[in-house]
Length: 341
Image (cartoon, rainbow, N blue to C red; front, side):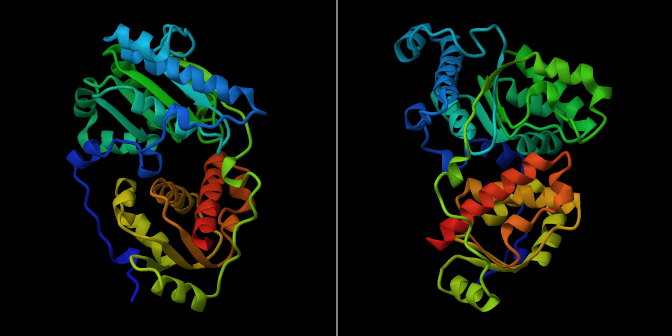
């Protein structure tokens, strides 16, 4: 009989949150030389060079001979420009996370890697002063999917990065939004323009263009299956889970997003019955965070009901969280394709 995610109540302590600030399993083995630039997109090869140079600058702060030996004398990237941060901007599926993880792997510790949400969760769990104290000892902080969803995040992250960079921490980040455009469409960004500009000034921006590799030359997502087919598929796969979609959404509302990763740890595949369009932004954003944790762990997804592409309503896709929703659909479609294989 299949297990249910809604029966899980994971507990994640503050120490675990710090220890888990490493690239997710999907990106545990990536390196600069495993990134394959699209020959039709010259910005991708340029981004590899800029990221390698940035990593070399972090390493060379203490080990200049290693910098010259591994990365040569290139001056591209954020450290060479005198700015403490490197910011990879581009659409989803162009390999930004691959490059960010490669930067992390190229720099010796102490170092930390997490999504923007995981970083804000860490500050919430530890408190601002304790988070600064722990992260200030790091050489590198890598932040994936950098976004500012509300004024509180803007003030928090601006202050946090100011203190960390002044302590000598280098910061590398990815986002689908240019630094000076963060927060647009989500809150009164104009009221926080000074903070946003101060944040943007800490980064050298590197653009990464190209089509979404997750769907390049591949067929559309598999159509939803029947409930009977879904149950049979789950029973045939040890370690999988089966949940009613509405019940799972309600369960996610009771869990802090920092616990979503632990919720699916050890799961071989997720099966969701009765998928339908989401009814509110709060529910939709929780599903986005959940989808990110599934994608990090390469957990296949099987659904009945409506197609995954229908999760977010047209109104949602016209709003300020459009890029987040499209990224979630892209990742979930890729995971559903994995399940069909």
